[in-house]
Image (cartoon, rainbow, N blue to C red; front, top):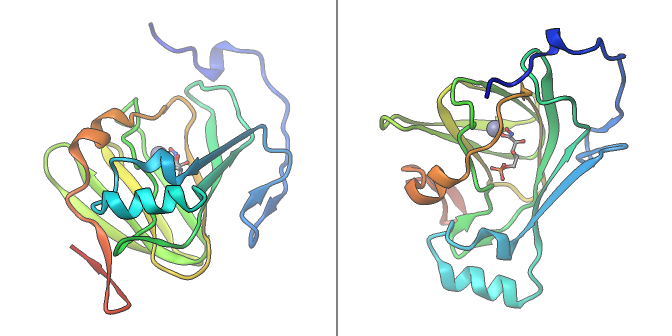
Length: 192
Ligand code: PAN
Ligand code: ZN
C-alpha cells in the first residue's frame, strides 16, 4: 500500500524542541529507545566478552530520543542518538546498524560530541567509514546501511535527520554484518 504523503493530510502546526547538545537528550521526547548489552547479542566478534558485560549488570549501550512526526513523505524525522563509550573485548561499542526500509532514503548525521566512525555498506559490496567528531556532518546516501561506533572516552552524540517514511530494516544487517569493523589495537582505533 502506498503511504500517504504530507500533501494529502491536514496542514500541521510548527513546533520547536529543546536539545541538550552536550548531554545528548531531547526535552519532551515522546519516543525514547534504550538498547542494553543484552540487546546486542550476535553483533560483536567476542560473544563471551559481551556475556560478561550482560552478567556484570547489562549496562545501557545507546539511547535514541525522538519527538515523532507523521511517517509520511514530505516530513522529516529527526533524533538524538547517544552511544556510550566502551569495548566488548577489543571492539568498540556500536549501534546495531540498519538499512532503511525504504532503501532510497538518505540520512544526515551531525556529530555534536565525542568521537568515532560512521561505518557504512551497500548491498552490492561497497564499504566506507567516515570519522565523526564535533562539527562533522556525515551524509549517508540512499541505499547505504549505517552504524555508528564510539572510539572515544565520552558519549558519541549525534543529531540525525531523515525522510519520515524511511523506516528501519535491521534484519538484513543482522545476517550480513558490515565488512568493516572498528577495534582497539594498542589503545588506538583501527578499522579492519
Ligand atoms: C538513527 C539510529 C540510531 C540507533 O536514528 O536509529 O542511531 O541505531 P540503530 O537504529 O541502528 O539501532 C538512524 O539512523 N535512524 O534512521
Ligand atoms: Zn538510519
